[in-house]
Length: 152
Picture 1: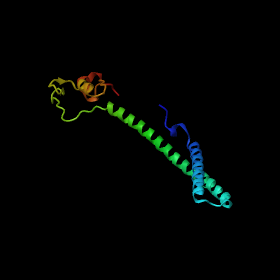
Picture 2 (picture 1 turned 90 degrees about the vertical axis):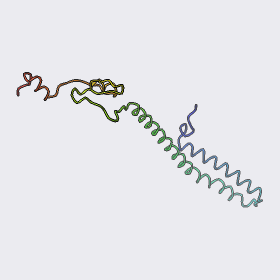
Picture 3 (picture 1 turned 135 degrees about the vertical axis):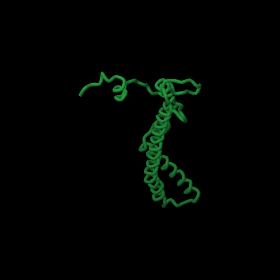
Picture 4 (picture 1 turned 30 degrees about the vertical axis):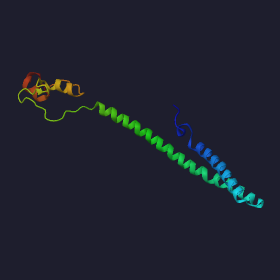
């Protein structure tokens, strides 16, 4: 599939083409009006000058501004689609725990939806994308391993 016109051509080239089309259309319409109304040949130089200069001066800036605005809209749409894709990807990675989480007051195991009691670390690894590592806090170290506390 070919990209849209605005992605294949720049705003200035579209403005030049639009100005050319405007001049040709203006000449055709003016010639038709002259033919219908029957103007005198003495007015032809003025009529031809106005017929060519007006669209040649007015159309290109108007077409340029319009094409530039459409380019900006296309650029912002592309950025928005990329941003939405990133957000969708991030949303797909989000897993969160909701509601009440039953925890044993004594051993701190967590009850899952099937009624089984699991260790907190295995429960979190199963229900989130977190990877659990183990260590020992200073309080537990001083209570459980008092001989291994560094002096200092």
